[in-house]
Image (cartoon, rainbow, N blue to C red; front, side, top):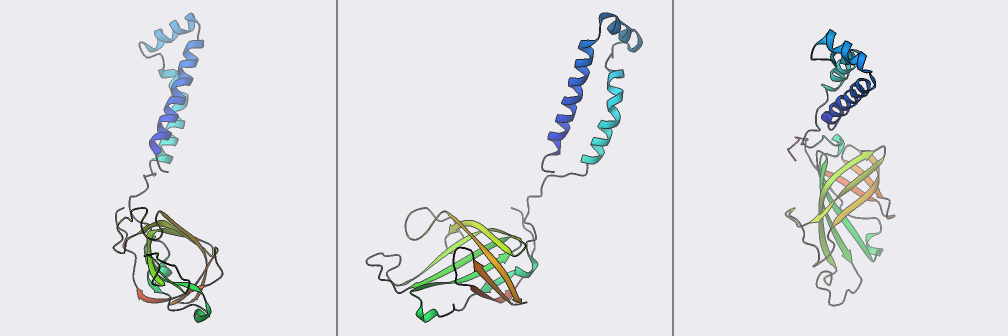
Length: 211
């Protein structure tokens, strides 16, 4: 439960409204009787029927805590650094990309090296026919689908100012995952047809850090 205090407030407000409603519907004789039997606390008798429910509600919610401001463990099999060395029929492709991915708990950092045989003209970003982009963010896996989402950044993981060379802003991709071995994973992007074969080059363990 993200905010148990909101539930406490809702429950107490509900009980108060019922109490006030019952008091307002009492006749003058009933109110006088309540004052005589209960002194200056006429709501006590009205509150008693709800005391049990309030107690049960409190017991159910006291175990709730705010979500911790730390990383979650992520996928154990992905922890570490993975590298793509080549793609199928690389020499025949007009352009292709090679991925280097680092997973730390539920976070990722990716380097995407792109190679192109297309003449980009005077474009200073891609005229050499090769360039690199970087992104960081978080990921989650549901069944065999890996969803990564973050922002493009600089090589040192600092914020990449929009504009200038190459892409900036939100980076997001979906992959179908095939685990071929402990150190080999195949990612099939839903936005493309060329699979990404990754080899584990360094295994790490998750040590959650504050966000």
